[in-house]
Length: 375
Image (tube, rainbow, N blue to C red; front, top):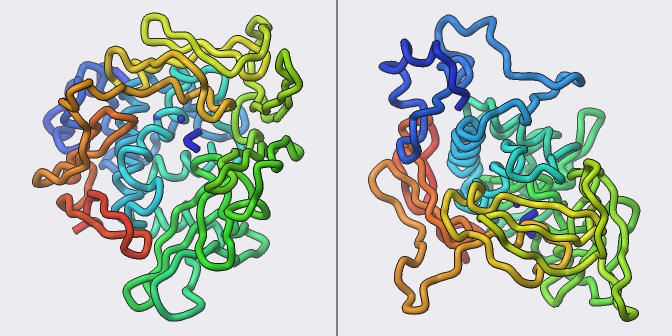
């Protein structure tokens, strides 16, 4: 489940010469953040602080779209470099989720909250792999507990947090890397053999189709591949609810925040002007698909899949002849990823990392491009 992201200040102009390596070279520079907002460790930025919400957390809703895009690409480049592009740490899929969090204008009814917001806030300001480790592993690095290459769920816990949400890959003679499933609104589940990101730690790989329900704030949605549900506490109104159809069928959805008009709950979405409008929770909600994917025609009308995923209409359909297909790649320093059929890229050197290289992850079953750790 993908549950689915530069401030324009006058002072940035005078610093432009020093910013060439600090922003994404593949997007417009018309909305560049100041050097302090891109990197608080820039000389002279000691007193600078991110925009903060009343509770002290970073207020992502104060960020313009260019800030959100820059921050999403930087955070995901660092995550892939330091933890490997395992699972949804892979650059393209990571950027999609980061932009959904960092750009409130794209996804107004489902702003991130709770663990998901806190983790993305943490990754937005990393400057070393030690910083990334501290974000991904709340309880500290998770040691491998047996020899060989495998994936498992973290189990270190204590008064400062736990690693229960972390999918750990043990490889290369005991080296550990992590994918914190809470970044995607999920947790880690295991069948005793491997770990996956899922809607429930208890009903992950081995759940049955009968396990489709709201369990408190957690939305369980079991398929043949396991529980693809999400933790509704981390989005929108922070609640899960069930909705009967005109027949006796029922599905479940995370409730959006706000005071939008009510509607008859449905499992489908319509498209207009690049925006998808849907009603999976009995409340009208929209998502800016063209803005999220930075592409025209990126909204596809039809059934939500799964039926609670308000982001699923956002994708670019492949051309009938197969032309223009999106492919992951390395091009010198540039990581090229795919985001629902749309290419997305970042220059590794521009965000303080090493050149792009292809990395094999998930115990040898996946290969994705990623920046190298800082030189």
